[in-house]
Image 1 (cartoon, rainbow, N blue to C red):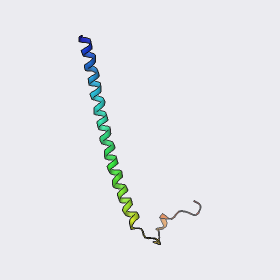
Image 2 (cartoon, one colour):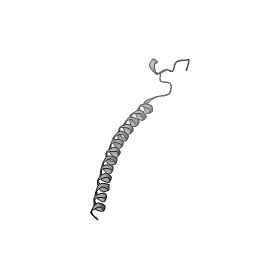
Image 3 (cartoon, helix red, strand yellow):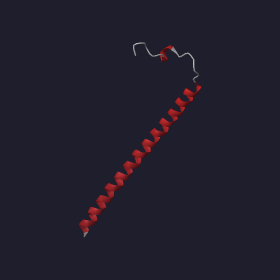
Image 4 (cartoon, helix red, strand yellow):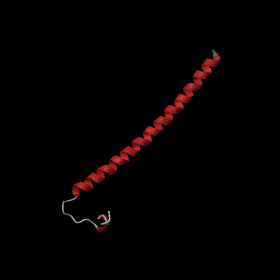
Length: 66
């Protein structure tokens, strides 16, 4: 009986460690998603401000060989 309790406690500790690691992973991914959403919003705002026929900066132009 004692051995079974030790095995269960060991499994519980491993499960808690795994859950903590998964929570940290989800938190990091959420931070990255938030940052990507912010960048996407900024890019969308930049695209909205572009007007047809606006001259592009020379560095924005695609070279002829592309």
